[in-house]
Image 1: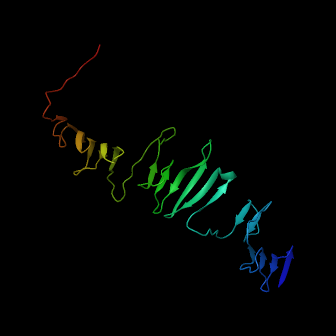
Image 2: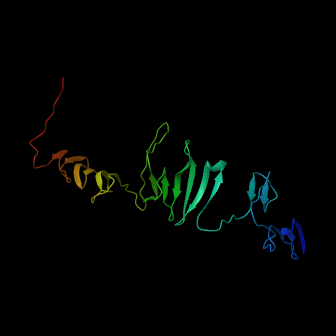
Image 3: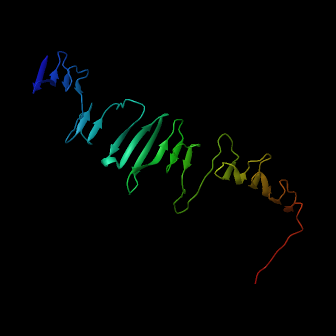
Length: 219
């Protein structure tokens, strides 16, 4: 056992009989045990012979506790752990503070742009843009070669105001534009129904207030 001390403090540096080194602790429990803060002016490598970044770790990093954060650049960027097994990525807002940009929720749901409690696998607070020479959006069905899908417009009460359905209704081969639960335009097997979900003519119009068809040509 070797102890170095200054000004009467016996815990400045201690080398225990089993080869463990303690700094500011009298009972080091690891090969190097520091009771306080540490700073490295250059590289810190852990379980690796290389020094590729400021911190290089060949193994695990363990942060005790249910919440905490890793911070870069004076708080401009940080990864935070939240209660409920959530994780967020925060970046500087260009004004005064770091704000949450991405949330990974327990169960795999992802929230983008301040969506801290995503209700679906991906929920975005804002506009989604596809940028390409030929941009496209694809909806792929699993477990069946016949495609289907549903696009919905919701109010803040989560009720569906409008929706577009493709092969979503029974019978297949249909395209349905709905207001709430009421079909406004229905296409099936090449027949078009207005107010009718089973059109039997190329154009089938049905409604209690339907007086006919009006075609108006402006000047």
